[in-house]
Image (cartoon, rainbow, N blue to C red; front, side):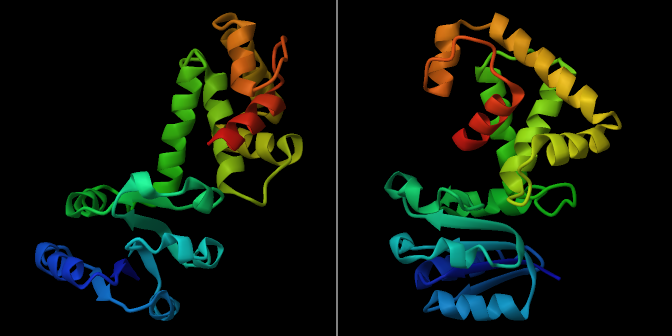
Length: 227
């Protein structure tokens, strides 16, 4: 399997990449006139990482079409992130980075080819933990780990949706415990979180007046939607 494919229709940028990335192995840098050419290349060869320079053309891109790319990780480069309309890519599993040589090198130098998880999953995991910290959960509580895994599974797998029948049992299997223990520990850590917050703060997070301890289902699906 080839590891990396970098696509751009910016000729000068491609020439810079050729020069600066010559010491990296298993990297293919291509200059294309269209994304159709890119898709033909991807159908012929499977890549672990595909980096696509959109070159200000993101409003014309069909992101659902690109989601069919058979690659472990997909990164989109933008000239300026401030110009990106998040609504265009909001349900797509892509990573966004500013178009700089340093950003590309940082990705190539990181452990992006580890079998454990893709860049998207690692990035989502970091966002989940930040949400948990912001909500004043006690990180040492094992229920927090179970909670984070539940949110991660729902966010990263569109085929999973049922907490009781699918999510809890999968998390339980990963940690070597029962599904009931997963659910109970999540309840426990939510109770602790509520003691560390005010009802006003919790209501602001959910966006409506609730004024009681949120259920695991309510919290998990709210976190998924906020990511």
